Amino acid sequence: MKNAETLREAMRLGRVYRRQDLDGLTTAVDRDLKTLVESGEVRKLGYGLYCRMKKNAFGEAPPDNRELVRAFLKTDDFLLTSYNNFTNLGLGLTQVYNTAVVYNHKRAGEFLLGGKRFQFRLVPAYPKVLSKEYLLVDLFNNLRKLPDNVSAVHDNLKYRVQDFDQSKVSEYLERYGSAAARRTLREVYA
Image 1 (cartoon, rainbow, N blue to C red):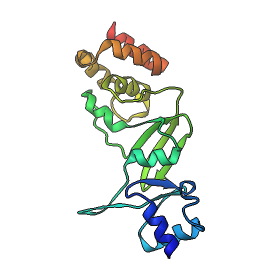
Image 2: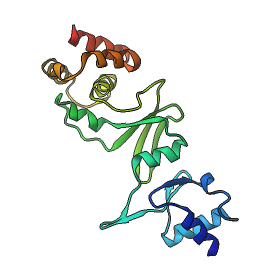
Image 3: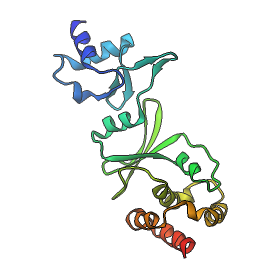
């Protein structure tokens, strides 16, 4: 149990670790992780991911989505977003989604991490930070995948077009926009 305690103490609360990150902290990492998971001091989040959970007034606090994705991809180079962000654009979208979208250069597919669903997409480029102009371009990149009324979104954008910086939209459109998004947004700004 002494080795398991050493491992537990080396793990920061709320941080997500890959099994490889813990190599060398004890002589039997797998056995000690199993002991800690069985005792409830560490949670296995899936795919070789472990976390020593923070506690709050409601019990265990799940790790931050960004922390989960960072550990899963083994990099900070990704953009974490959600289709739910599209509703903040004020274009009449109403659906609620329970899957986070991760634009990255390493993995593709849908994965369950820590009980949360993530859709990983391989894309050639993405910005470092979300902005409403990028979200507008991303919305039109993904509009056909959404169950909302597409024509209503187009009509609403005509009335809200002044809410978006046209030069930023054009820049993001060139860098990240699909052919359909370029065509549609150029028509709106014409």
